[in-house]
Image 1 (cartoon, rainbow, N blue to C red):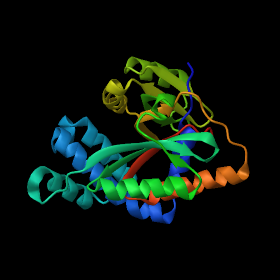
Image 2: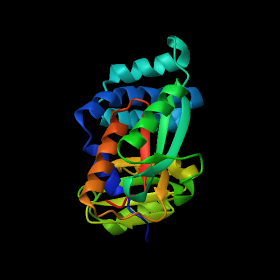
Image 3: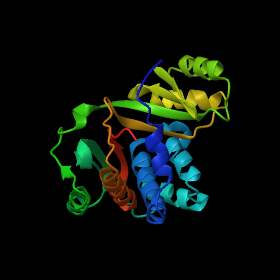
Image 4: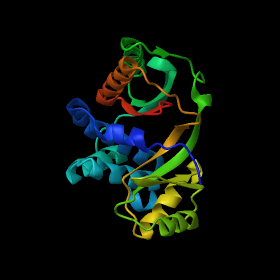
Length: 241
């Protein structure tokens, strides 16, 4: 089995700044709203909502906040309509970057994202300018420390419908086709697995290596600003860090 590891980027996100941590409940509430409007308020019948609730709990979002977000989106309160917009461009060092946002004000969000690109020497491009450098896939990360039988984990993952299995020293990455992501995740949960993290979206086809410390610092500062912006839900880079 082979594939480009996404675990380093996930770990980088876990080291978010205090400002980013302060924005996370707002981001989670937006994700909940979009999931509810797409598939209804019952997580048992809405895999996307179930996935978002799991991530919200992992981020220590209180159950009352989750419940209010679901009620608001399902009509119990006045909810916002969020638009999903993805911006593309380059971070310093020729690193391709895709930024996924949820917004109720596209002018504000476009200006904010453009500012983040330019502040640290990046350049925002047009739709399609870097998306060809990525492929969509689901990534489910399982801790090697918690589940140490690699052969069994691989067997279970493939039995549940995974398209690939990528082990490393700290974890296993279970890869799926985007259309199979929720089904594979639900099947693994039914077998008793818990996850370090998971996502479904763009993954770099060919990683970009950066060795200049000054450029690395600029990329990291750019990532911090993206994480602190409440409209930015996720970001995807070709940076092999």
